[in-house]
Amino acid sequence: MMARPEHIGTRVPILSAAEAVSYIEDGSCIGFCGAGGGIGESTQCILALRDRFAETGAPKNLTLWHATGLGDRGEQGMSPLALPGMVSRVYGGHWAQSPKLAELAEKNEIEAYNFPQGVMSQLLRVMAAGQPGMLSRVGIGTFIDPRMQGGRLNTCTTEKLLKIVVCNNQEYIYYPVIPIDVCMIRGTTADTEGYVSMEDEIAFLDTLAMAQAVHNNNGLVIVQVKRVVKKGSIHPKQVKLPGYLIDAIVVDPDQGQLYNGSDRFFSGDYIQEDDEITPLPLNQRKVVARRALMEISPGNVGNVGVGIADGIGLVAREEGIGDEFTLTVETGPVGGATAQGIYFGASINAKALMDMPSQFDFYGGGGLDVAYLSFAEVDQMGNVNVHKFNGKIVGTGGFVDICAGSKKIIFCGTLRAGGLKTSVGDGQISIDQEGKFEKFLPQLSAITFSGQEALKQGKKVFFITERAVFKLGKNGLILIEAAPGMDVQRDVIDKMGFVPKIAEHVKVMDPRIFCEAVMGIRQEFMIKHC
Image 1 (cartoon, one colour):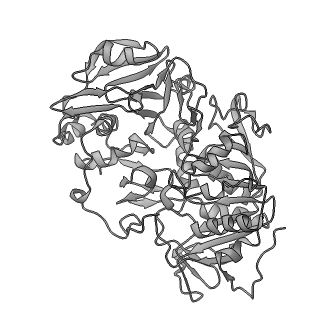
Image 2 (cartoon, rainbow, N blue to C red):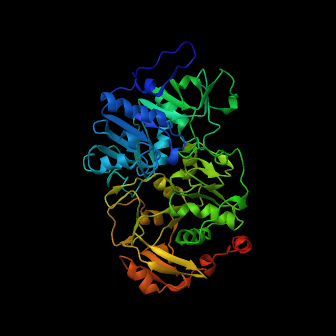
Image 3 (cartoon, rainbow, N blue to C red):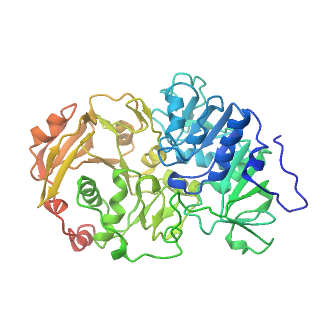
């Protein structure tokens, strides 16, 4: 049993971050809540843990557990914990936000697993309930499948944790519970009995589920908050974490919603006028977002992922159709327009905020009509790799869960990568500097999305780039559209690593996509999809 700070009655100890992490023992498994850009991250506790190890060499040989990606793709998040000897194993849903930790895995200096974000968040509830594991279709046919890599990211990770189970003539992956000894979570306000509200938080994430899982494992639950108030002074409907779950409170009066501060539009306290949202500049990213928008229908419920796809909500608001369907983000927001880059997961004008495990319940049950996801590499059979390429570990995040649960999948990205420069305007696009690297390859080194598995399940799959659109058919990718000004052979096929199937009639992408003015698609959008 993990040692815990002494409580006096129902009063929870208020400790410094250094005092709180002093209870963590060698070999512990530590769970972290949070998401990119500082969302829900207990930053002071992470830094205190780093400082303790740097000064004393303890605690060592830790196992780290995180469903989401924490960090800024640089020095923040979990990168401070990438110290020799401190960490021996990591279970991560996403890795690229904390590249220092990913580098240790790439060098085979730590054992590294990558499981789907949704599965990991749902596993927390399974842990809390005292169950041994869960069955899921998520990951079948991908690198998560135990008949392939089983979610292992490097050669020093040899323990096989997953297995295939057949139930009612259907294959499932069995994901076992990974007991967590300590967790570092965050809220906004705690009373002296440890009851915590999250009024300033951008997302609830899997905070409650993690606290319950660790508490029921006789572990140590540390919560970082902005302030402490008198016991009983938080309205019970505002309490997200009951006090009996909490072992230590760490106060950071300067705690912001994000690394760059706070914005009450993100926490839903204010609603921003649509015309106050800065439009995307007309470039290749906006071209992809505009064309992708045309694949959604009124009343649909969709998911939008990180990367080039994250501008779809903003384009929809420019066109006046943002309220005609609902876009969700896996971290919990429902509706609104998501922030971009490292702050993905923070949404403006959200209509609701779900716990992350519940959001993935909806996804896993087939609730999504459409999903917008980015891609790194694609092969001729429509398989996609996003989790590990060019020797770099990125991780899946919610990608695998979302693909498994969506009826229609729209992959968004440029045709090539590495210095691609384009000029967009006057109804067409031109290539000023071609990308150095092929993204459409004859064969992939690893599979994060199985095209053939998707077709078996009756999913519709499209690949939208700045110069062409492809559809997935039973024999592989089919070129169905090309951008105005593009020569199909020279600018598309010759720039791919394989020759796709060609539709009998290759359409021209709508020229309005490539014009500075708003496309003006509201009326036809409503008529077309009636």
